[in-house]
Length: 470
Image 1 (cartoon, one colour):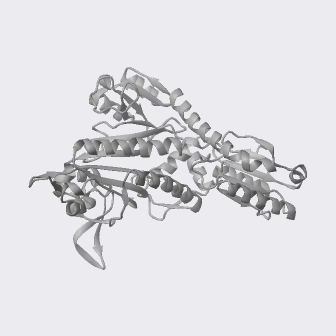
Image 2 (cartoon, rainbow, N blue to C red):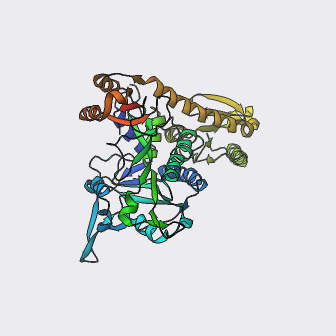
Image 3 (cartoon, helix red, strand yellow):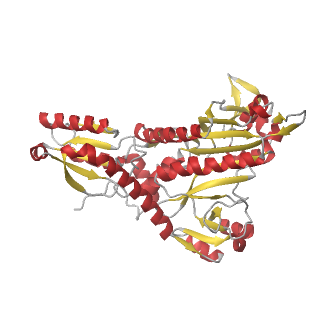
């Protein structure tokens, strides 16, 4: 009898494969309240590495980290009509505290534009206070009707940036810089996902924004996932909260603002972009564990050698774990590390010691080969970079091969059954967008004819990317 697979094959049931992998790779569990999740240590390690890489880029962009309360007076949200209308169905509202009914209900933070603007209005007085660039790492709550771990949860972790500028041009340029140099660079060069950078349609725009820039990734099943967004808020929130600055004379002007964020949804995107039927495949630049050195048997010489190899790899900057748990069968340990997607496994047993070699297993391209133990420290940094590049190349090839040019709504719906469709925005328009939505297909973003991000929805030559999405 054939041995049952560890994971449901992707081709058989992609959503079940996704859930199996989260469980078997020990990434997360469902929380006790519907729609919440418990992120397990290995899954949280992926998020921590994402935080580290993102935080460095955000700080390089000039933003400073701060923290704002998670409880927001309900009256704050009502100050910007479009914003409160957009978030109303997702709000969690606290009406009682300390055994008493509150004088004013408080909302559990769904996003922080309102509370941050309350303080921006105090902190910004003159043009010398601008630009004001703030970021916070926090949790948010949005009551989710169709939860899926990492992708859509009632509570999730994220960073949210909020900025105030003296001019529209400064705000627009900053939102674009976050979109490309922070988010685009991270997702392409660290996550290894070939995201498309584009502009959201008016229908898909963030509630209260005048423009939303997005990064869309194609998952392994051809569906799209919004990986992050950067919004131009114009002066909508500034007017609602009277956030103004004094010009060089006595005249005052409303600030121009941006907000932008990415979340633990990126962990879901990582799984669905790179995972295969054997488990995760973690990009080496992201991986908390880039290499694991496994002792095949509990031989004293083997144990000493795997620890020595671990120290040598650590000395050349590789994030390494030594697995000398020989009371657990080797095969089980190897499968567990494969499920977790660690890029490299270095396996050492008594026979390997005799030959002066170790067995190198590469998770991303697959395959094993013997390698001289003495050569490992010099060889593996280059191997990791090769495998990083391979993941990005595979992501790009999948997106390109499963994106087709279409001319009609029916053709767009057909394309979205297995991938993405590209259709002229002039031919589609808002009316066509509504017809697609009736069939569960959305316009993920608008791009210029040359693939760049357009400055306006109606720019000549704009193309809409349409797909089914998570």
